Length: 83
Image 1 (cartoon, rainbow, N blue to C red):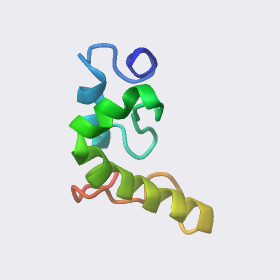
Image 2 (cartoon, helix red, strand yellow):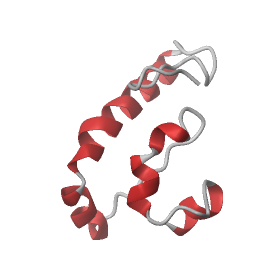
Image 3 (cartoon, rainbow, N blue to C red):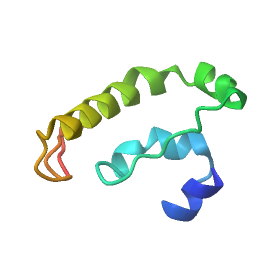
Image 4 (tube, helix red, strand yellow):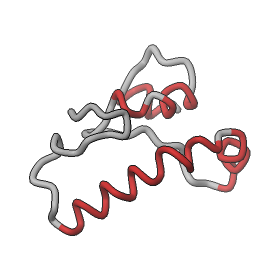
C-alpha cells in the first residue's frame, strides 16, 4: 500500500480503498495488490477483485498485445465512461 499511496493518492486510507476505486486511475494506472502468498487472505476477503477488475485488466492487456488499441484513452471501462 505504501507504493500505491506514494504514486497515486497519499490521502487514501487503505489498499482495499484504492483498489476498489481502480476506475478513477484507469486507463493510465491500475492499483493492484501484490500477488504474494502473504496476500491470499486479502484476495479471499475481496472476491469482487477477481470478478470485476481482473477481466477488465485481461481484456486491456489482450488489446495492447494484439495492437488493437491506438492510445491509452480509447478503452471504455465497465462503468461506461471512457477516459
